[in-house]
Length: 552
Image 1 (tube, rainbow, N blue to C red):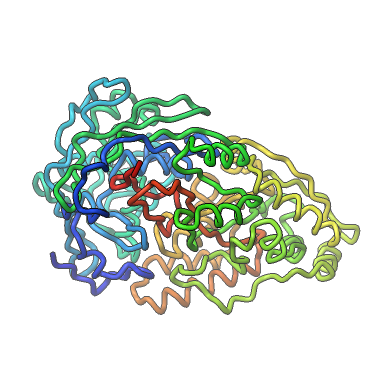
Image 2: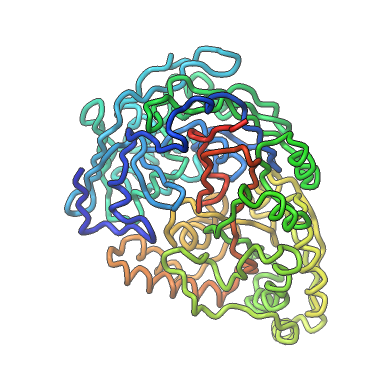
């Protein structure tokens, strides 16, 4: 494969050598060589929240993405170290001007032949070809589909004309033959290849999508190692082995090893921990802070931890009082002790956030001046903003023991600064809907990386082009910030992009549309008999299970 890159810049560890290493058809290296004893068993995982939608074009929350990654495949993949690797595209070529991407597709990949209850799928288990990708990209970007992340590829040629109904198809995506897909851009976009690894851009079977319509998310059909079997919303979701999966291990044995997966919704973290210790789960989503040290002691070789590219914050609707005053927003940022709360309530399992971008992200600025804990300064700023007697505000947060404890700690700290904080807990779906509509004025949110570029944080979450459902829930607008984040999308010089993003982040920190709290770590606690698991840097919800097996 030849990758021409004069105009291509791939951030952080997405080195081009990573693209070339191990094409999608290369067998997976697995422990122990032979597959005897590896096949069988169900991987049982306790999760805190039920998935919202299993149609990948609508799955933009971690609870849904966790399942989507087991059912669907993208052109390119992102491995556990955050490096770009081939997936359903086994190779690609980029034109000298950086505008034309030509993908060589892997042959022999098939859609799921059966689904829930052994029912035959509408597609019949047929092979995936380039025309399927053309249809998929048209479906994703069709305004009637209403995908919240379609605009991630708004630089594809003909995107605007197609969205506006001026054309019947997306001009920039074409099939040259059954296994050659070509995508042409209107302009350079530095992280384009890495965007294609995001779950929205998974190949879909037209027959099944059209059969189920808007209910496809309740009856998903993909190409990945597991097939959809059963879903009782709010309770459990069951996946079964895809007998026609395209990967094999290093000995030529078909994958996956597992018979299936079962995800059980338990939002009580104490119950998750108890059930895990009774052997009723292979893994739990969260090790609650009271059990952290016990987990380290009891499971030293199967409690995995690493930094994750994600940020935990409280958003403020800057169009609503009192958050329409920058000094109020700054005062709120000075009113909390980030490190103290992390140490007391999170066992040090996070990094205090000075700004938007997490450590490890291209453009992260270790010298950024953030907010310290200074209740005296907070009071002074409130007085200057016209609130000498302080303010009373309400935080809306989704139901979770961790979120509740953190919010209660901040509630106590803010009192010293003259801020009365009322807490209102909500189900995740209800809170998300309120944020999309602009009805949430002060809300908890966590954002983990979709594609490893500052664009995914600064442009998506704070550029005024993305008000509401597109990501900017705070309705923040700053013309200079917008200019920098717009131009950085087109810039091909890495150092100039870095400068632009760091300046944009400095502006956002000064304007303070968020209460910057902390940057995540990601963890996964497994039973010692679980083998082959790797914890991804993007978060445990992005883990793949095609080569995981149970040694029991």
